[in-house]
Length: 199
Length: 105
Picture (tube, each protein chain N blue to C red):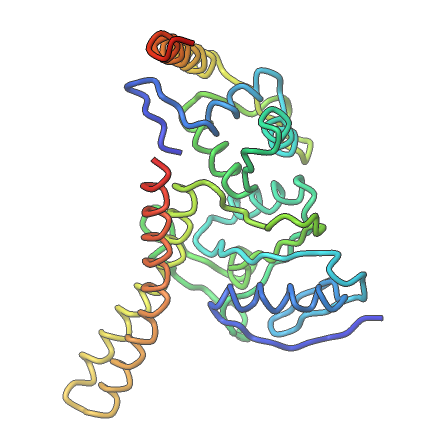
C-alpha cells in the first residue's frame, strides 16, 4: 500500500536524509518524489538506506552522467527540488556553479538540484564521498550558494539603510544564511585535522 | 585525489583505479576490484569514484572504452596511465627495498 507524505526541507540535506532513513526503518520505501510530495510503498523495515546529495552546481550533462553512474552502481536515484517555485518558464542564474556560473532553466537542471540515492541496506554506512579531498570539495560546493545568499541579504540591508526594520531583517537573514557556511567550514576543518592525525 | 606527479607518488585510490583498468571496466567493477584486492580495507564511495574517474580522464591517464551507445560507461588505462603506474611501482619497490635494508627484514 502506498502512502503520501508532504515535507519541505529546503537546503537541510541532513534532515531530509535522516527523515527518509527513519521512514525506511519503519518499512517505507520511496517510489516517487514531487515538489513537496514523497510517495512510499511498504517494504521490510530497514531494507533500504538513503542519502541526499546536492548537484545544483553541475551542468545538465554532468548531472545526467552522474545519475546514470550511480544507477549503474545498482542504486535507485530520484531528482528532488531544493527550492519551492511554481512558476513556469523559469530561468535562473547560479553564479556559484562551476566555471563562473551557470544558467539553469526548466527542462534542464532547475528543480533537479538534489539527488536522493537509495541502496539496499547491507549494514555499512552509505557515504558517496569517502576520499578526503573529494569530501572537502563537496562541502565547499555546498557552501557556495549560501555565500551568494549572504551577499544578497547584505546588499539588501545596504539598500534599505537607514530604515531600521528592513535593514535589521536583512541583516538577520544574512546571519541565518551564514550558519550553513559555518557548519561546512567546521566539517572541512575536522577532515583536515583527521588527515593530519593519520599522517 | 592529490597525486604528487613530480615525485611520482600516487594516492592509493589512484593507483588501484589505474591497476583495475589494465582490463576495461565500468564503475561498479572498479569498486569490486578495489574491494577484492584490499579485502574490504579500502572503501570507495560512488561519488568519490565518479570524481576520480573524471580527474584521471582529464589527465589522460584513462579513457572511455568502446562505443558510448551503451548505458554503462567503461574505462581503460591509456599509455600515459601505464607509464605513471609503472613509475609508481618502481618508486614503491625502491621504498620497500630501503625499508627492508634498514629494518633488516
